[in-house]
Image (tube, rainbow, N blue to C red):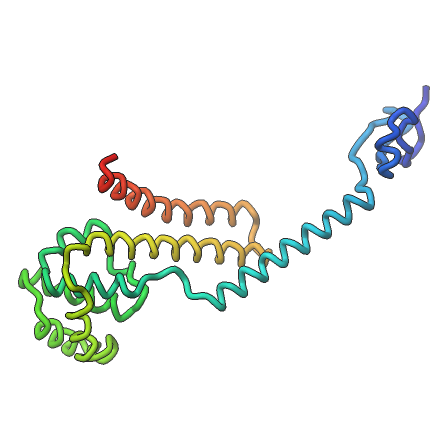
Length: 231
């Protein structure tokens, strides 16, 4: 039997009443040589409406994310950062406990990063740290005013009543840094996706690499938590 000579649209068979009521139709690709070849299904008006609704919801979610990123500060605990610096001024030997858990870049405040770097250098050089050594080294580096001046250093001395909790605070600061890194990775990925200029394979590969870097830090962090809990 010779098939139709050109592509056309045909309603569904009579026995499929449910699909007929939904208004769905099949697109049939046919030729005079190979007969009918049933292909893809056209979207019904309801499907098109759902597609538009999904796109609108995605846009709203992106706008909400953008608004929140502008209105809210990223995860951080400035008090815990001050507690760490104060504890290290009080007991410099606690650097041996802090260094395996965090690094200078984990600090949210740039001034705290600079102070920690300087304190770490002093400890490696002299084995001790005191307020005068720290002030003079920051002054020599021309960053004393950048970190808040001598008054802020004095305030740091009294920030922590004891150095006993410095390990806990170091883990907390590192956790906040991991969250900021993950947040930055997600926002950057969303921005590139909406920019729609790079191939999806390249975007996906970049996201995998960025998330792998975050995961490495997370595994280290979780290992410490398990160690502390005796697991």
